[in-house]
Image: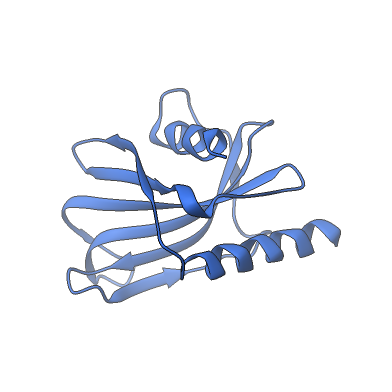
Length: 132
């Protein structure tokens, strides 16, 4: 129960932080797009780290509801010591800035994974764990 309350508090902190100025730091760029972490809103609590990653795609993508989008803002929860990461929120945004799809799984629904070495997920985990 205590960890659920902590995770909820971290999610609220991230949501509240989205109203603050954002400082995006590059993570990587590949053929699909560029990835950056919001350095101002990294939250650490009880051995977990929550953070937001923005992706700008090089071409239009298709959301689960078939809506086109070219930007994603995803939230992650990482265990830096165990080197695991979970996707805890998704916002897909079109060229006009409208959210065309969003999903916020519960902590229990968000699958925790150990990224493959040198994968995009590994780079995102490393970026989140290296700040603050």
